[in-house]
Length: 181
Figure (cartoon, rainbow, N blue to C red):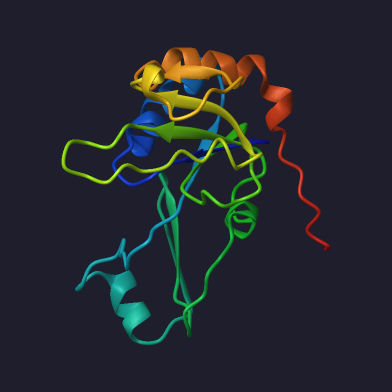
């Protein structure tokens, strides 16, 4: 399995880029999973549904499956911050690529998704100057990057080029974590 993160501030275009990369990788016969960090309370279940009723009754985990999909809903008894490695460990090990959205402080190799601040907004700093895990930058304004870099720079809207680069450099993204430390 290979893993690559996509880091950047909210609104930079991470979700759209990941969404566009999935079919690019799939066209090359790759199985793709996504891990996404959610900052806010979220729910994939809805009042009145059986799974929601089971959770509300106190179930720690509810697994629902059909012939098309499986979903695991786990309720934490107290606030719990799972790390990116914990979440990757939950995935099917037979996947070819894990695209990780968010977790900008993780020790995964990452592509920084950077946009210059919109008019009237405070500029968001780029992280590539201080984060050794950033291996490339995807941006819509390369001429406006805040500091020179030797990293590969991609057009944020060119998922084909980013996908080709990932596939050409796949061995760099092989996921290996010592889970015993």
